[in-house]
Length: 323
Image 1 (cartoon, rainbow, N blue to C red):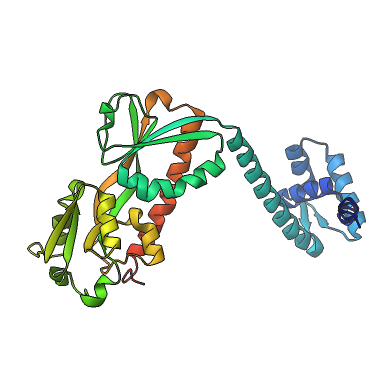
Image 2 (image 1 turned 120 degrees about the vertical axis):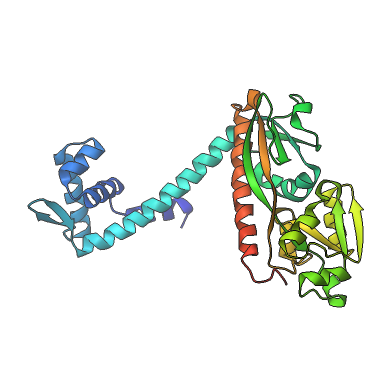
């Protein structure tokens, strides 16, 4: 049997589909008149469709009462199936429509982000954006300079902490939650059970997070604790790479080490305290805020950040983030 023949046979097994739409409206509203009003047809048209459906099934689908109608047992069963089918169809149609709209959006989005954020968080997710918006050209640059000094050479910016200036719109993208993290092999030779055990480890720092360890140790109740040694890097991504390679313990932004935690390349030996650094901020060039490609990128990155934030919250609720 050909595909067309199978499709025809399957269709013949179905009741009149338009009648199912009328049936659902009547069952939901409990009234032929209310259904007619909602569907913009006459009361007679609704009654005709319901009679056609009852003839097709060979059973009554509604009990007529003084103040309207209610589904029979058979009607109630049918209503559950119809609601489920319509919900699945609505979801599928909505998804296809969104994808169709997304594929029609074209343009260029110039994104300027912190180097570590771009390397550790944004780039691993960009393929998802490009698959959804294949006609949008993302041009990514990195700098830690204030965006007011970048002039208008950006559409979207990502920074740590507030970024206020004329001609930009700012919103919190996601919180920066941090915990100590290290390679699991480092804990084999020097186990960590308490914060004070960090005295046996090298602590890793970066230029932009030089006060982070002292802030965390203060919250952990060990403000005077000193690591065995200290190693400093220019960039956060170098600091995180050093931790992954087992050079020492870093105070890591959980959003930036999602992949390393998931694969077991990094572990967090303490459940807390969780130190909150300056929130990641999304900065939009006001002159480009209404561009369709820019709006698409903003919507996408906020959704991705929401998922990422939810993941870090789940981690911080565990007793220990270990493999």
